[in-house]
Image 1 (cartoon, rainbow, N blue to C red):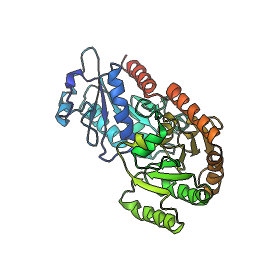
Image 2: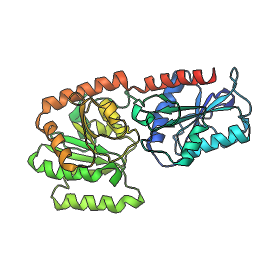
Image 3: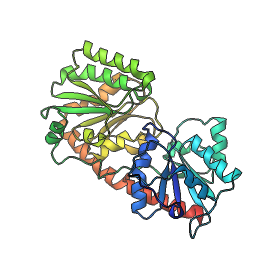
Image 4: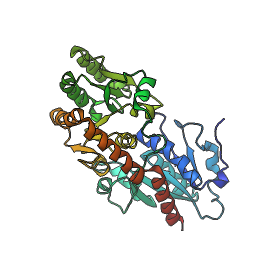
Length: 352
């Protein structure tokens, strides 16, 4: 049965107006349970979310003219343009008792329409310092966190490999996320084709789906892998709801994106005790300490990527030590509980 909260008790609404899984959706799924555990009264609204989350019905919006007990307004926390627009309609046209918050993860110049929507918000959050530099309004930086209970190192890595049908004797380097040019999946494949023939103890895992317009791109990559004779060692495993279990067999993670807003996959890998080689996009340079928890490299060159991955494949002790440091840093600095606590302080300031 869906978790249906009483709208009278809800103080923060987290809308999700997209059916397909995305980084924004993943953020909501991870964050809302922690917020409620800390005493924040947060409910979601919209499709594409599990029934375990507190979820409002559309008709509950009719109650938004009345604020929750002890408050002058509820908070509508938008993360997409369409959600900002809905908030503006309810606050400014329907005169509902709402304070509008927008979280921006984008690292590019906004369109005029987006700038207008952002300018009408009561408060704005940026997910990184780099993101904040693209905003033309005052903002507060609150970085994303990760569920370090769900994403955690395995007690037995060989057993974690065996549980997924992987070879316990192999080491694995992973690249997870949507399969498309923007995500740099082709750069990862080219680097693995160059490196793996000299490293018979290593294999690669590509986890994620290609949406309809990117299926041909994925097919070409698979054909390239077959032509190189590496289809048994460069594995396309598809999209999985238990993705945290696929991080646990890894010894190294690669994030070769050409563009990214924030980018959660390096955090997920690091929380699992896996060092990361990542391009300098999104918040990656603010997450990874080069030489300690991984390496940050320039965008778009598979030769630089190959050269940066190679030392990790060659030195197991160094790789393992950096993985341990990555897990420790994630638990201390990028825990989702820290993000939820920062949001609680932000909300209280906004409605004070």
